[in-house]
Image (cartoon, rainbow, N blue to C red; front, side, top):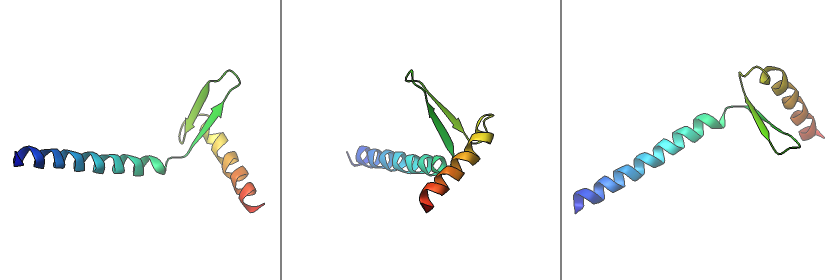
Length: 68
C-alpha cells in the first residue's frame, strides 16, 4: 500500500514539474494571433515567415499604448 502511494505521489510531482517546465519555455515565445471575420484564427510565432514583419509592428504598437 505504501509503495503505490509513493508511486502516485512521484507521478504527480513529475507531472507538476513537467507542466512548469513546458509553461516556462512557452511563456517567452512571442506570437501574433490574427482573428478574421469568419471566426478563424491564425497564430504566427516568432520565426515564421509572416511574423518577421508583423511582430516588430506589434511591439511598437504595444509600446506606444503603454506610454500613452
